[in-house]
Image (cartoon, rainbow, N blue to C red; front, side, top):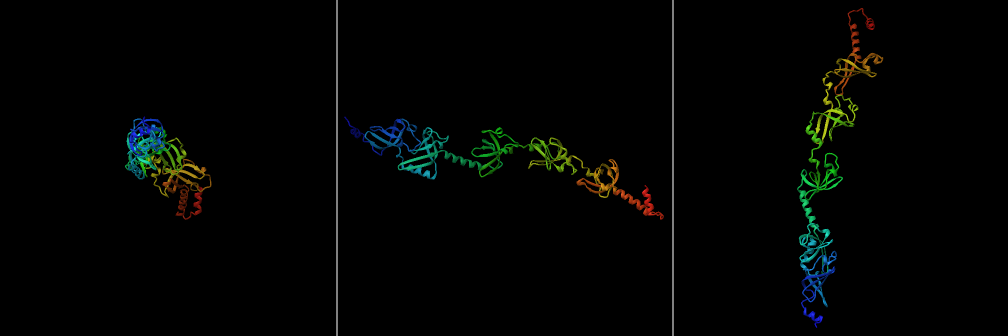
Length: 455
C-alpha cells in the first residue's frame, strides 16, 4: 500500500515558489478557497494571501467557483499545498504603479468584481487594486475598463496595497470642462440653464459644466416669492451681467421689460397723465402712474407761483393731473409738472417800477391790502396804503378801486409791491405847486392851503 511519502514522490512537479494557473473548486468559508492546480491535492488559498486590502472580508465577495487564478506555491506541508496571489506581480508592474502614484498620472484598470457595500476589485496588468465605494461613480461597471487615479500606494516587504479613485478623474475632467465653458462665456451673453438649487437669497443655475448665481433681486422687476417663481429642474433663460474670478452673476429680469419700460413705450414727454398720490416727500409728491410705475412731482413744479404750497391741499390717494416733463431711461425716473398745464399770468405782465395802474382791493388785513393788478396778485403794505393812523378796514373795502404806483416787481418770485399813498401824496403836491406858480400875486401860501383844507 502506498504511503504518503510515496504519493508525494509521484507528484514531484509542485515546487515552492512556482507560479501556476489554477481553478477555484470550492469556497467553504469567507477566509478559505480551494484551487485545483493539477497536483496530488488541491491548493489552499487563504484570504490574507489573496489580498492585502482590509476592506475585503470574504473571498466569496471577490471570487467564485470556476474562476481561474494565477497563484504562487508558498509551502508544501504533508498533504497540504499553500498558495498566494500576493507575490506574483512582475516588478515592472509595481514600478509602473509606483511612478503613476508619485507623478499623479492615471492608469487604466478593469473592474473585475464587486465587494458588496464596500467597493470594487480591479486589476492592472495582473495586480489587484481596490476601488472604494466612495471613490466610484456611475461610470464604474463590471468588466469595464476605465482610467483611475492612485490615491494610496503602500509597500510592505513583498506586499503591495493599492487604492484607486475614479471620482478624482471625473472631478478633474469636470473642472477642465468647466473652465473651458466659462472662458467661452462673456458678459451680456444670453444662456439657457437649469435651476439646480434654490435658496432664500436666490438660485444656482447650472449650464453644461459651469454654474452661475441668480440673485433674488435679479429674478423679477417686482417682489416675488422665489419658491413660487422657480423650481429645481426648471429650464430658464438668463443674461450674464457679471463675470469675475470664474464666477458668473446672472439676471432674468434683464430679459424682461420692466413696468417702467412698458409704460414709457406708450407715454412720452409732454403727455398729460393722471397719477395717484402715494407719498409726500420733503421735496415733492410721489405719484403712481401705473402698477409699479411712479413719477415725481417736484415742489417747484406745483405751480407758477413759487409761494404756492400745493402739498397742503392734497392727501394720499388723491388723483392729480400732470404733464410728463422728463423721462430718464437709464435711472428709470419720470419727472412730472402740474404748472405745465397752467397758464402763467405773469407771462403777460410788462410793467416796471414807477408805472401807475388801477388796482382792485381783494383783501384787507392789519398788515396791508391784497390787490389785483395787471391780472396778477399784488400787495400794498399798510405804510403804503395811507399815512393816517386809522384802522385800514375803516378806510378801505374789498372791491374798491384805486390808482397805485409800482414800487417793486419780481416776476420770477410772483412779487408785486405797490403804493396808493404815494399817488395821493403826488396829487397833493401837484395841487400845492399849482398855487405856488399862480400869477395871482395877492394869493398867499396860507390862502392856498386854506382852500385845500376846506375841500
